[in-house]
Length: 215
Ligand code: E4P
Image (tube, helix red, strand yellow):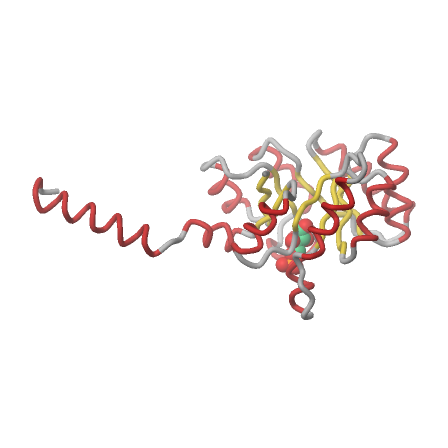
């Protein structure tokens, strides 16, 4: 299973990349805006830290402009994956761009049939948003599970990125269902390390050792 980091924060990307935990990075306009730095420069810097797929999202909403923006983004680095929203114009743009071998991550996927449309249009990745479904009282994780079942029936070259992850349980469920990728916010990545028994266990080992051998 691949872990992507869901952030545009350079320090956090470096921090987790140093542990070998970052197979790729996803950004979106909100995450880029949160950092307040130049979009292209930020994406370029991320590509210099992580050698894997880096998602950069278009901000246009009509197909022609999406295609233009996507071509520019794809020029930044070979690892760029262009994120395109799951709207009709986005599907149209994906159909054009996938034929040019530009990798597309179709984002804002909230239903299995949207994922099927994305795969048919040639998207390399689909991003079902589980947390935002949970937020409106739907069981978010049912979405990637159904998409997994559908994709397994066919031979689409399309990977499932479980997105909008809110807690470590989402990551476990994504792994259990065989999702290809979980894109994880730094805060959740941090939570994934924690277990109180690990801390208590280590404290006891250290104190027993120090009692006998000193520190
Ligand atoms: C990643 O591809 C998505 O943009 C991101 O996971 C959305 O997460 P959010 O619902 O926490 O904003």
